[in-house]
Amino acid sequence: MLFMLLGLLQTEAQEFKQIQNRWKPNQYLHNEGGALQVGPLGAPGWHSAHWEFIPVAGTKFVQIKNRFGNNYYLHNEYGKIQVGPLGNADWWSAQWELVAVPGTEYVQIRNRFRPNQFVHNQNGQIEVGPVGAPGWYSAQWKLIQVSGQAKPGSPAKTTESATGAPPEKTFSYQLSIKTGSSCEGSSYLGEETAGTDSEVSIRLIGTKASSDMLNLNSKLKGDAFEAKQTDRVSFQDRDLGDIVQIEIKKDGQGTGPDWFVDKIDVQKTDNSTQQKSNYTFYLNQWVKTTNSTVFNPGSPPIKYIVEINTSNVTDAGTDANVYLKIRGNKGETDEIRLNSLISGDAFERFKTDKVELLATDVGTISSITIRHDNSHTNPGWHLANVKVYKGSRYGTTPIFFDANRWLESPNLSATLSPGPEKIDMK
Image 1 (cartoon, rainbow, N blue to C red):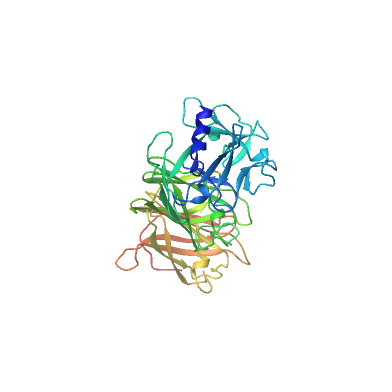
Image 2: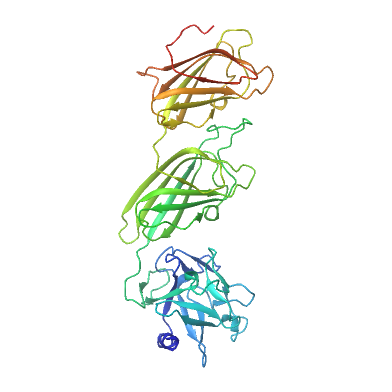
């Protein structure tokens, strides 16, 4: 079978092939960014993913030359797999044996210079090394014939050399990741930063398949995931079906690793028909763990208008950081710091402070928890009551929470239930 492969290559000396991985069929060998990589194709006609197999006369080996590069060949002269010019035309490090996998249409690509080294992507990137198990799919490759000699920049047609089937359709996926504002969520230091300095990776989970875990930072320029910022990333993959979940993972590094995600929009485009499908994932929450977390689409956040009334008693006001959480029959909001949403001096004696929040729809409101962090001088606070309007202040009956108590050490927090409204703030 090996001689059949070499014979095919010799009769098509000027033809090109794509090198497709068996383990991850959406991944192809290419050097689009200048360095050798394995991953989805940005376009079917990428010359950086086209390879010429040049038989080495009198041997069973071939040189593998890239179509996009200028005399760029696959080699491992310096111990790792690269693509580049040859220092010597006879470099054994640039000669490869195509070892047929019995009973399949795949081959293993073994180096002549280091015969125990095979091309694989077992660890998520392109490598050359020993095969951990004979059946590693990550070290098995399909050579897909590129038909026609398209001009640079023009898509070339591809056909499956072994089966005659058309190539798998590719889809474009654009992610729009919106980071929340710096006043959302909570911090016990009272210094919230919604953005993150961590490395962020995302996987799309569809009804037909899931994407690989995609590192977003490597595809973005400048400061990524800053407060109130929308970052956009595009990639190519096979048809994942309808996108039903998103998996997010952070490495937890950097000075501000926690991240408040507002929402993530996904636009899926069929590259052959340009038909588009859109999916929105409303997170509106902190992502703090370094473990992978899977999110469902969720519901759009709604507006809450909150009025906080400080009592008319001596030293009732506070300069401490005040936090609020709203609960209902559908769930609860994150704890939200209120000070940053109020202009001027907040929570002064006999004063009403009003804030507008965008937060998770908790359904029918059943309780709130309000607290302060006991910071600054004389932090004790006498809270009269809290009113919460859901949606709009006008035409909406407020939900009234009577407090009429001091929040001071050791009792810095109060969980309040709805009750009849009382007018007197004293």
